[in-house]
Image (cartoon, rainbow over all chains, first blue to last red; front, side):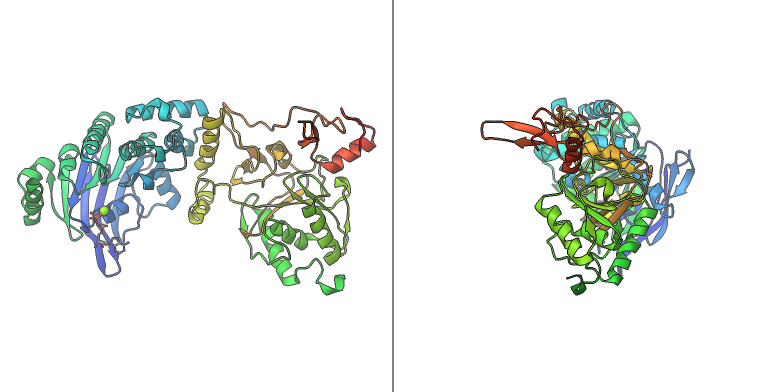
Amino acid sequence: MTPLLSVRDIEKRYGARIGCTGVSFDLFPGEVMGIVGESGSGKSTLLSCLAGHMAPDAGQVIFATRDRGPVDTVTMSEPARRMLARTDWAFVHQNPRDGLRMGVSAGGNVGERLMAVGGRHYGTIRETATDWLARVEIAADRIDDRPSQFSGGMQQRLQIARNLVTGPRLVFMDEPTGGLDVSVQARLLDLLRGLVRRLGLSAIVVTHDLAVVRLLADRLMVMKGGRVVETGLTDQVLDDPQHGYTQLLVSSVLQV
Amino acid sequence: MTDDYNFAYLDEETKRMIRRAILKGVAIPGYQVPFASREMPMPYGWGTGGVQVTAACLTPEDRLKVIDQGADDTTNAVSIRKFFHRTAGVDTTEATAEATIIQTRHRIPETPLAEGQILVFQVPIPEPLRFLEPRETETRKMHELEEYGLMHVKLYEDIARHGRIATAYAYPVLVEDRYVMDPSPIPKFDNPKLDDNPAILLFGAGREQRIYALPPYTKVVSLDFEDHPFEPSKADHDCDLCGASDTYLDEVITDDRGGRMFVCSDTDHCRTRRAAGHAGRLGAVA
Ligand SMILES: Nc1ncnc2c1ncn2[C@@H]1O[C@H](COP(=O)(O)OP(=O)(O)OP(=O)(O)O)[C@@H](O)[C@H]1O
Ligand SMILES: [Mg+2]
């Protein structure tokens, strides 16, 4: 099977400081990769490089496009990359404010990507938006409300609907449950897991929270100081950590 | 009086700079060209962008008409007309057909324009995407890459809230299948006049320092949805003075007991029709 995403020797520096370095991995269709590590370990930097929000200083990010096969998204033209970003990719931000248009209704937020790829039938757009709101458990009668009238958990679910409406194949998530109450987190995780499994999505999920990766991720990468220090199947890494740092990470969670 | 100023107020170097921007705008219909807007002896909001464009286009042989909301006699229109009469010594007129340059705020004249005429629009906010995307870097990128989905989000919001596209002014258009453009706050009733117009249409935004243009016979399409097509709307009345049924009307309150009348917003057009013997509900009260 060809990987959906092949990451090779990605490096990003902020001046002399290392953001991340030497990161390589393959992600196969339908697979969810978790990235864990302490604050400042380079998770967000890596994700930004993979999703094209930031240009890495070195390395390749090869994505299996629908029409042209494997293409390095680092060197592809900006229009092509932005087109990918609103069709085949999705990005769920930790803070829903970064991923939503707060001045636009829930329906408009979900419909935006449809209109961005040429949707010009209001009735169809609205119908699709209603359907997606239902899938993320937002009542149909909230479709004309603005996100600012939603709770944090609802905003996050709206962000997910807005991202998935165009049927992307790869979802990037940066701390999707961060900043939410524990019970709200659980519900969101449950929903995310259901969507990922049902739609056969591939995803890369960055998180502090080992419970999140335990539930969502097939495989795990552990980062420290900008480098990947351990990688493997999620259960394996969590139940039998090899690297000293991973052991520390796992045990510190168990103490909570 | 004219001796105190360079012809049409602006110095020649500034006019050259503005003409370059205009030419670029004409070469790329609908594209917003940045220019170094000058201080004008009037506040922003009084059409300083339009005034600079007009100044750069004027020649001594020109005949200038200035309208504000369709009328030649409002303070704004009168003061701009006086300004150019004083600084350029050009003839002025209120007759659309006789003018070679028309500066306008909020209207396109009812009398069809002809080849050789220039219509200069005063523009407050040139960026049609500004409403939903405040970042200038991002809107510029959207134009560059033709990422215009956001424009339809604005129309979607309109329909969701009002049941129809309620945008009545500054209704966005697509120019030559390429650039989305704000036509300035003209009523959408005037939008169809933008399409395939024989005149040169120039747009000047002073505070925002942008010039854009529609050369003669440019394709201009108002954005819409398949199931909510664009409709150029007007009040469902005839003009009470000249009886015209196909013009844009202003509603005028006539007394404090709820009396009102509908009259052409284009005063020159209305007057011309009445002079030709047309009369509306309130007769020839002119
Ligand atoms: N814009 C920036 N300028 C300079 N240094 C930065 C910048 N962004 C991140 N860094 C540095 O790069 C390293 C990795 O940061 P990054 O934000 O990727 O970590 P993270 O694992 O996402 O952390 P967190 O869990 O706190 O979100 C850190 O040393 C950080 O200080
Ligand atoms: Mg981070």
